Every structure is written in structure tokens, then in C-alpha cells.
Image (cartoon, rainbow, N blue to C red; front, side, top):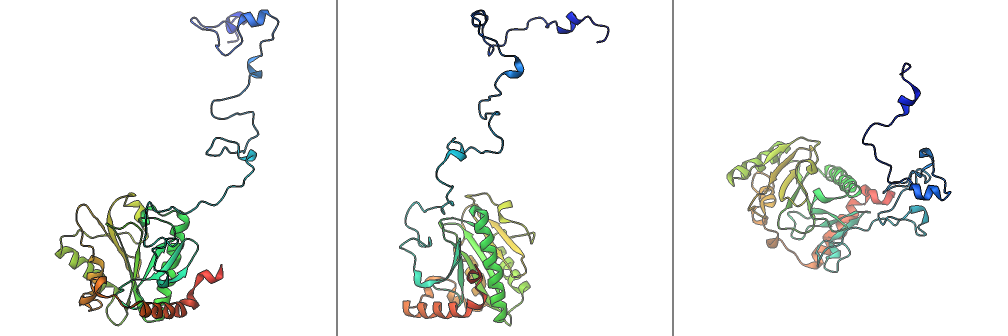
Length: 293
């Protein structure tokens, strides 16, 4: 380049066209100055680079600073129709509710396998664990840990399962099993054995894995979680026995109450349900993390 003539250096290559965004020669001849390239506005289609950095645009396309209303917390998703488990729904049997958190609540299971069989349910309308938002997942995990501590103090271990099949609202079943009845391995073997007998492929997944890594939103599945954190998972492709989780836990190998495998055969009066709920609330109170908030 040192050896090249100055005119050669600034010479434009062949077939170069004029910049269409520069002012035309006609405008220039009228005495209007043509801005130098470095003085041209740095405006792009999506963002104005001349704007002060760090300001976000809202989903409506408006500058967030100009909005007179502060951003409101996102409301939980609402059901498309009546739901038995959305806490704000008139269909909920509120006398069964035993604890309410920020994003989830606990309720006694209707027709439970035992008097302290509970459900962890999201307050908003979510169909499965896979669809939960991060803050709801966090509180679900908090309830799991707390219930394990609670049942351990009462000489029990708990088994959790979810059936995302022919259900519209997430119900995470939590069933306590007396330590004297069987070991965790016995429970695991019972699930695997009965799955094989019914030609259900129940796969063991890594202890600290997330169901979201395995199942996509909308996919049907069944999974069971043991007190050790071990998980067994089945992807439902066609049909699945609705009472499978209960049948295994009610079997002779575990709780030995085979006549309670169907919840409809275990219903009690509303008065008795209210009594059981009051008793659970009282027993659970020393472990209630919602009182710390």
C-alpha cells in the first residue's frame, strides 16, 4: 500500500452503485448538506442505537420507561372451564385443604389410601409437572422436602406419584408408608413387578434428573418418586390403568389394603373429612414453612 498512488487507494471498485439512503444529487444541488457517513443516524429497524443503553422495550413495543404503570406480577394460568383443583374455583372442596403456600397448596386426598394421604397441587391451572413455571417448581420441591421430614418424624416414608393421563390439573399424590411395613427397595420392586405383569415399561431415571428433561409439555406419562429420590418413569403411548399407582401401594407387598385400590370405594362422610383435615393441620403445623414467610 505504501507504493500505491493516493488516487488508486481511494478509487472505487467497478460496478459500485450509489447508497440509496444518502440524499440525492438533486437535493444536494439545492444547497442541502449531505451528511458524512459517520454523521448518519445509527437507526435500525428494531432498536434505536442512539437511545440510552440499558432501557428495555416491553412486549407491546413501547418503551418501558414511558409506561405509567409498573409491571404487575404474572397471574397463574386459568382453566378453560370448571376445575376441581384450581383453588379459586367454586368446585374445590375447600374443607379438604390443609395448607396454602404462595404457588401451591396441600389437600387431603378424597378417598385416600390412609388418613394422611395428601396431594400437592398448584394454585393456578397447570396440567402436569412438566408445565410448571420455575417458581411453582421451587415450592413443589419445598413441600416434598417438608412432607418427607414430617412423615419421617411419624415413623413413615412417603411415596410420590403423578399420572399425567386423563387428568386436567396436576395432582402430585403423596402416600405415607410405615417404616415397619417395608423398605424402599420393596416399594421399588413392587412397582417394577406389577409394571412387568401389565406390560408397562417402567424405566429408572437418574436421581437428580428433571422430568422436564424427559417429557415434553402435553405428553402423557406416569412417574413415581421414592423417599431416596429415585424415580421410575413410564411414557404413556396408548392406554394406561388409571389406578396403577394406588393398586401397587395398596397391594400386599406394601400397605396390604387391596380393597382400597379405587378411591371411590374409600370415601367417607364430609364430617369425617373435616375432622381428618383439622387433625392433619394441627400435626403439620410445626413443619409448616409458610408460617416463616
